Image (cartoon, rainbow, N blue to C red; front, top):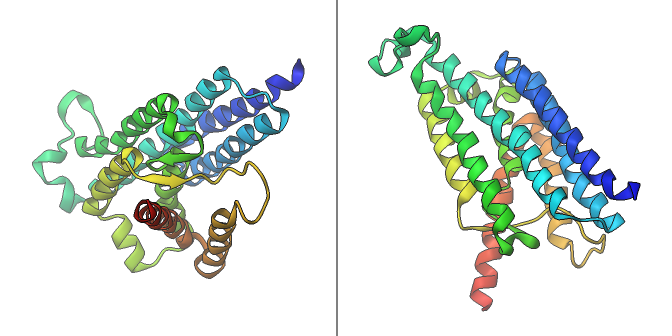
Length: 251
């Protein structure tokens, strides 16, 4: 049946968008990379929805989805963080430090920038664990890789479209970037339940939290534009933690 291949085709479009994003990220065209990651995340949102609508969910689709996410939402954010760290440590005042030496093996980037690739490793671990974790059928445990990708990719977007002295100095601070990298690795695999944004039905009662979060996200986007992207991810984490604590208290 042709319809059982439709969700997998959409997943492959996610992988294609992610592969193009990798090329742009390696070339340090971070805005173009962010655009294609966004396209890939859209495909990632709809492949599962289409699979549920057509009732053609399969183990192949689950594995393919994780492989596509590994590229779009795992590899690309790691490369982007690498590029941001490389830019930060290209500052002569920073690269004088011995831990950023670039002479070995003819490498033309500071070694410390490779810390950004920890995001890719943490994403791979999270995706592999997701496929075998039976708790994550209706919710997530740890931040989903697409949400983490939005968090990381928001940095070059903000630098490009809403640059201010304060924001730029923060984003291009080496300690901020290293700290964010480590936080990203932790939150991807943290044992914290987070509500899923994928709708199984469209009813208001059973999706009140999801609709409320979407409205809040829209308000933040209107008020803060691209600066809202990291704020939305933070709100997602905080709302999930609040709901988790309330449910734990009720039990």
